[in-house]
Length: 301
Image (cartoon, rainbow, N blue to C red; front, side, top):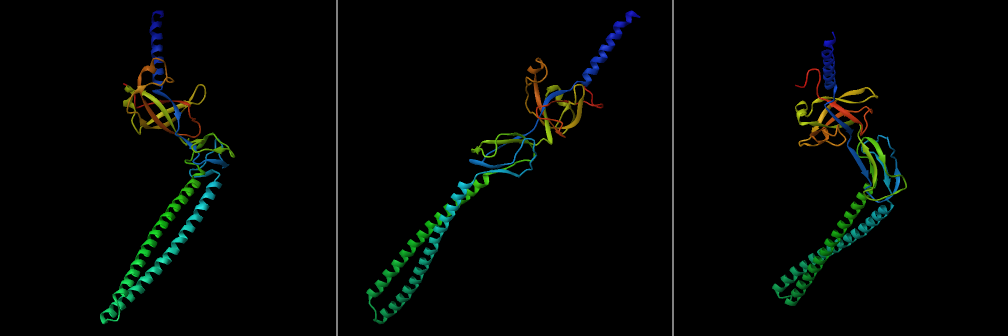
């Protein structure tokens, strides 16, 4: 009986090795999400800022605004300048209309003088004086039209300035870009914000991504859109398993990140993959996870 013990131990070791290989994850990685940094789009004092870490504000919600008093006053002044400038257009239009009527009157006089000249009752000087007056009216009308065009350009320019002020006022509103969880808050109400200053960071955690790394020999077991098993720590001894969908596979190889697996494995070339997982709140950004490509009907050769 004793001579059979080595064979028994060998069988136990082989079984244990096979079992360990079968349960060993195919790849390791960490969970991540697309984080959006919300920054100030204007400069001034933060008058309202209703953002707290852990909140889940809706997309498009105004969560605060930056002081717009100076912009409002500049916009109001520009509106007054535009209205005053535009009123000059009305005056010029009236003058142009008067000159047009004068021209019509002079043309009538010219026809009358030309008729009298045929009868010998008018002189050439009378006709020359009328033509000179007509020429003067046309020059004055042309000058008024030039002035009218210049004022129109001024009104258009001031209107554009008003639109710019309105845009700056709009940018002073702090609008939440996506529905997600506020991760970090960088500013407080009553602080002075400058253009581009980070205000808070937000991410949609309802769908989280596990970024893992697989070797070239593992690529045949994974493809875009395929469903695979994702696991993460439930407690010290057990894992929580959930299904995920492969959303991205790197087109090029890279060296394994230093935080992954053993030192020997970190020098190998691998491919990064992303697996999207529906998150019920259990998975956090930076939490380690693992994936398996095999199931009961798909065994490695």
